[in-house]
Image 1 (cartoon, one colour):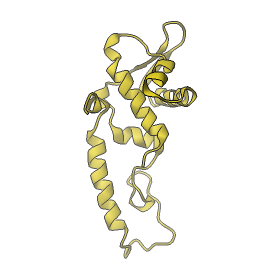
Image 2 (tube, rainbow, N blue to C red):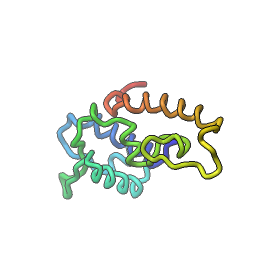
Image 3 (cartoon, rainbow, N blue to C red):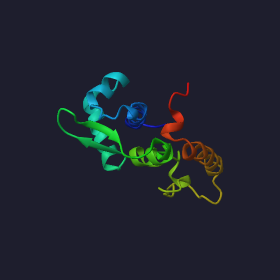
Image 4 (spheres, rainbow, N blue to C red):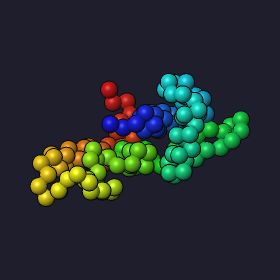
Length: 138
């Protein structure tokens, strides 16, 4: 399950992608209001997205946020890993954050095989789904 923080990050990126043709920066207050995201929480998320080199920000009357990466090149797998960490449901099946389970013998574990399949199918979707591909798809 993704965190609220990650869900809000996705919603903010979708909003910015939908408005990038307007050639203006978008204030966090506008995103918060339109996407029903708590403003203070959103500001923290937007700073992180800026640090991940997905957004740029400007201060002042004409300030706000805008995408610096093409929404066609921002994939959910990358975003989820940056915001939430591992995608896998168990640490022993994670590709990027592997950790052995203390109570398990992986050679005979009957659980690991199923969750590797879950991870693989999940990654297949998340690595092919970009912010752009999610836009206006109902």
